[in-house]
Image (cartoon, rainbow, N blue to C red; front, side, top):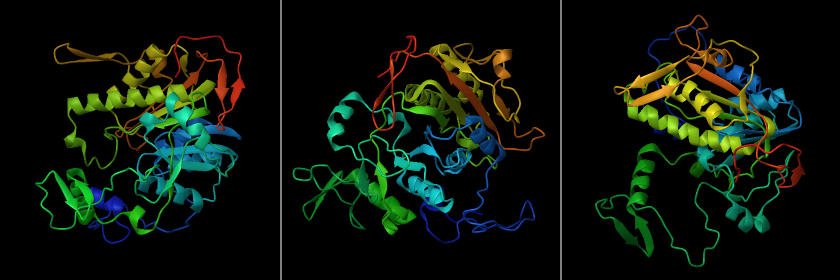
Length: 387
């Protein structure tokens, strides 16, 4: 039985979030057992890290890394040699990744707060930030424009900026704008304050946590990219939010994932690898994404996966709304190259999907390392223009 809201569970540092009335399996709790030695994961997540097949001294990107299980698994598979960049747009989740990496004794992981949809650095940002880029003292230095925060927004130029703050308890939220002791308080700030009052201050405000913000990375910077995309989560058990999904929301999820995949294609270098995974059984977010990738980027091809534990993908297509909407899926040969985990199968795992792409020739002549240096490449020009 839940004693907190879902948001509260992620924000609270202590307390009872869920009370177990009856156990499904008679197993002891593994909380704080062998800390730094083991990390419990679902089978498909473990398979995904092995499918990435990271090699020592490579530069690898995990675009949606929280809570860090796949990130740390990748780092261990490459023997903590190289660079694993882990991204998440949530401050608290980035802190979770950093904490887990520290517990596991891994030093090659660099975690940043960044929306994956903005992971390719824009040209104008590159020009403005080159003079202010910070070099990070880790195994491989990532060329980014970063700033240290403690969970609060910090302006680059504070002389002429407005000071924004939270409304005190009891303020009338019907007022769109308020001025309190010279401080401008918007209605959005009032809503945020109300949420913090309800859910607690959160870890970023209670422990003085520090994370680096990133403005993104240059195209062709990574040897391998893992996109474990946000999804409808219809494969999870128990399926707490399945009833909230609609046809429209599933279509929206698919569009969101395509935009993320477009970013991944730009960030991986020719000759590299992209691994796409979800924890949903919705083919619109799985097989349809693979169809989009292969049809849009002719230099991508599906690659065999090792280990192979899941079953094949879905073949054909699906029509909805009397033929007004159609999803194209995979051919029979393509379906044999992806892995689909069905909760009803004998594997007894969550629902999951994994696709692995080899990256061929692209419309680039140079590759960028993570220091922003250009490396000469002899590749024939392809079909897709890069930023």
